[in-house]
Length: 282
Image 1: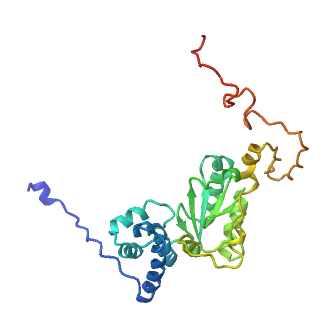
Image 2: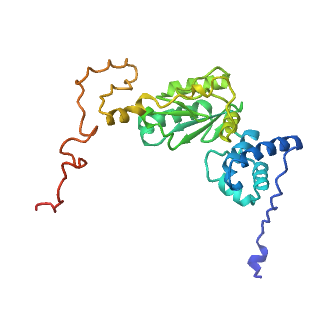
Image 3: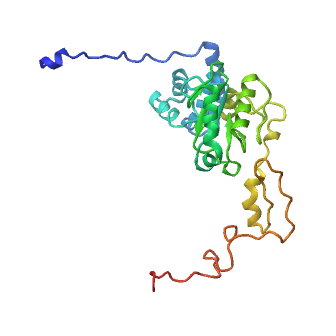
């Protein structure tokens, strides 16, 4: 050992202690639920994703204790469980709020106002990405895509849609959530807490009266492509903000552009092949 190395301080970190177990009564309830979940799969390890939702429903996030439980009931290593729990963003790794407010900041939502909404909520709530308000009600996060581009900009609360938002409407939304006032999603099931949502995602039925019937289907904007494919001419489904929706056009009055459907001479029309492609100038 050189003199230089002997004079250097060596920081030895204490090894992390094993995760504590759940209290006996909590574990008994989780084991009963886990048994039901595991019975749905031919291979028990396939039940890992819903089991992670199950322990998230218990604590509001996936703790080391929750990962230990999943490993034990599935006969996996904690490393295998941790690899899955850290891969998917739907599993929270630290305590979070009753309402997970996700603002889409992917391209379309961003240019339609998603970035402004996210900036407004960060300033209004006084938290950063994945930060939770002091009252434990709201956790804010930016989401890459909510798969609802036709309703941009979109905010989700516990995975329920709030479409066509503005900074002002999003601010009112989080204020209502923190105050305990009723909030109705634009479409989908009635809102519930994050823990209740996690239990539903674990595969247990939503027992709230009317919740399942209220889930509905796709919105009008999502069905435009289907109507075009059927040869229909749908009316404009989303009016500019602050303006009343336009009256439906009269049959035959709306002209489809070349982007709406293949034209008789389009390359995509099998009856009119485009022919060989030649170099420029030939």
